[in-house]
Amino acid sequence: NHRSKPIVSVELPFPISVVYDVVDIYDIVLGSWSTANLSQARGIAGGVVVADDKAFFAGGALADGTQSDRVDIYDFVTGAWSTATLSQGRNFIGAGTVGDKVLFAGGVTDDGTETDRVDVYDLITGTWSIDAISVARGFSDNVATVCEKLYFVGGVGLDNAEQFNEDFSEIDVYDGSTWTVDQLPYDLYLHSVAGVDNELIVNAEEEIFEMN
Image 1: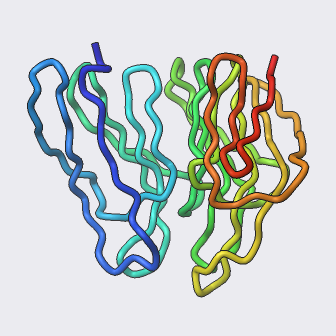
Image 2: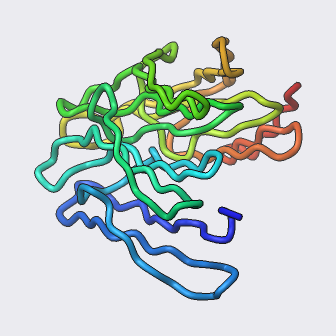
């Protein structure tokens, strides 16, 4: 069972002066730790998700201040690593999964601007496609799956000095094939969301939204 080996990652503060390629892996059956290495040392802000039997580490900030387009993929069954490439290098990516799709949405690019780009990986065919969210923005723990829909809630904008300069109220909702857009009653940034049963919980104002 792949869930016997969750991967632990730590988000680093920015600006990033030191980046690492080390991945610590804990086996909850054996009670032991092991290590592996990403193909490229970087700080991961968002862009980490587990789907099916795989863990994805997408994008992030490199030591020189540019944004990575690398995706490292770990297969829990075989223990093997592989790589893929995002269509656009970026940091502060919103990552989530619904059905047989894995999505890497939005982010902040090299010049400090937000993007609406979405890279979509199909777990069945093993192929990539490109889509877009309604408003360009970055994410940090703002993604959750509820009732077979994936929610990208609020978001962040950064300036060239990597300081937060904008927040967002949009909620982009993906059901595995189509997008809809909802709206929060206020703008949010640096908030977290979680999906529990049929509820989408937004912790900034302790809001609970019923989903169906």
